[in-house]
Image 1 (tube, helix red, strand yellow):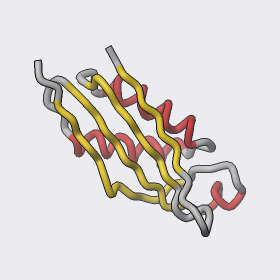
Image 2 (image 1 turned 60 degrees about the vertical axis):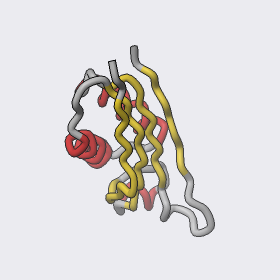
Image 3 (image 1 turned 135 degrees about the horizontal axis):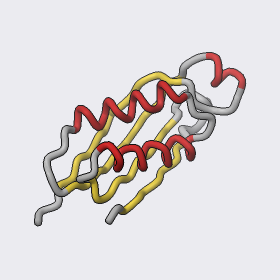
Length: 108
């Protein structure tokens, strides 16, 4: 059976995410990159909306917690996913570098 791959790139929005006091008060720009493999048809618009809504409504403190919640949530909502890699970036938190954290999970 074929395995397809969706890539979400240039995916940005504003959300409360982080541990610093200023990060808890003012939404900051969040950039997401996603690579998702799947066996059956997958609506990439619904996947993107799920990611955005999850981050904006849950207001995570740590990028790592957001990634774990997102990846397991994606698999639960879209069972046809076989592999997912997400990268979250916070381009506005530091003036001299864009920090990012990634997590990949393979689902059987």
